[in-house]
Length: 233
Image (cartoon, rainbow, N blue to C red):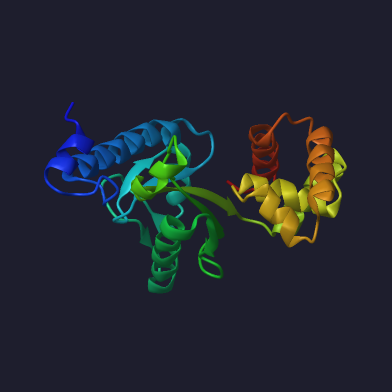
């Protein structure tokens, strides 16, 4: 392996300067490897999800997403861009993916008022992994996002009502369960409801206790069951 520091000193370049061509190549290789790993993760997820790269091309579609996209609100095929049913929805999803790549998690809904149901999207970027703080400025830009999909055919209030009746959840607990199902950040949900850290922790504990859940995965499975009962997917 070349001694990059020695080479930099020899050619007069300060080692603290921007990464060399070799370093750029290594960063791109790392990003490519991470996307390849994420493809396998998405394909194994029990809930509907897509992997979309920074050029808007779908890199992976799991079986649950294929079934959900068959409804026509969204078309997602590996190797092609995501296609929405309307220009307005297309602009929304393109903008949300671009924002997620830069700023992190984004949420939006498509198909309201047209078609059998509203499609909810929760978009999370595939962030770079770094080992040392000083390496963060050299880390590759997140090269892809994971798009989690959920569709409800009935009003969300009916799903909340079923969660309440079956598990004895309060209104905020039912809303939190739906938020977790959609892939929303629980802490962000709690903060949006004006809860402090202690109250958020208490909400999480009461929610998981009532649902007999050991984590977010169990909550997703409980809500999935309710949505199936309610006619959702």
